[in-house]
Length: 385
Image (cartoon, rainbow, N blue to C red):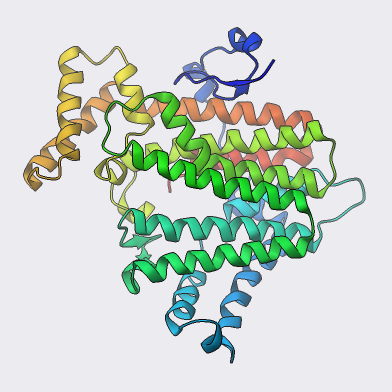
């Protein structure tokens, strides 16, 4: 029987056969209780430190190559400068870290990580950074990670072309790897990213967004790359196909959990921590999990729901005054807290984390080998930015 995407805000959201839908139970409050990760990020990164250094070096080499004698032949100084700016404001390298940890956990006995593993991890980060450059243009973002964006320092065109340049370099690295299946995996990711972005544009400023649309967007925009880096581990390590697909689903579940926490942080964190304004998603016309869950919660009266609806419409209205906008935002936060929507979103994220761990255990039965991946997932749930 073909699997279907089963979507319910309080149930595990994965591709499952129709015959198994009744076996999935809603998470409870006790699911949200687990000890803080035994490993911090430094300890987790130490498992693949040299390979992460290789990923970083690949980025620096791209910038250095453009500052050489051929830079003026292959493109303008702006692109060279924009690329250097991008390289010098690195992120957390979460996706290459996930890729390398999955590769290491599934290595055949007596094998070690190879340059091919590190190159594949770099491909994932090149794609991720390219999409951020493009997102900044679509979102009119002035800062990223607390620093000016490329579109701010140069212009939108340079930002788009810098992202395109990184995608071209990712394609070059994939060709050098010589593994045709990886080309297909990351081509699918690029297609998914486009589909997710179009879905987000289609539903922007639409209060009546439903869970299937939200989840499809999240699967495409976020979870697809998480899934790809884990599937890559199975391909590079020549695992049986069942294990490779389980790794792919493991990554997908982690990606969904990651985005759900991102949704909460947009409401609960601060600009100093995340590098972007509080409620930036809502200001951009995006309905995310906390809002969707609030409308599902019976603690909000009909009057509360009406007030929440009116406030969101005010935020979405480009003609509303700044005073009206601020009043609307001040109305929304207490209503979300009344509905306990932040805890509900975190509980849903945790459900995806538990599903991911179950999938991982089928591929990596050795608890010690899979521990860094499990702790990385816990850090995703606990993170503040």
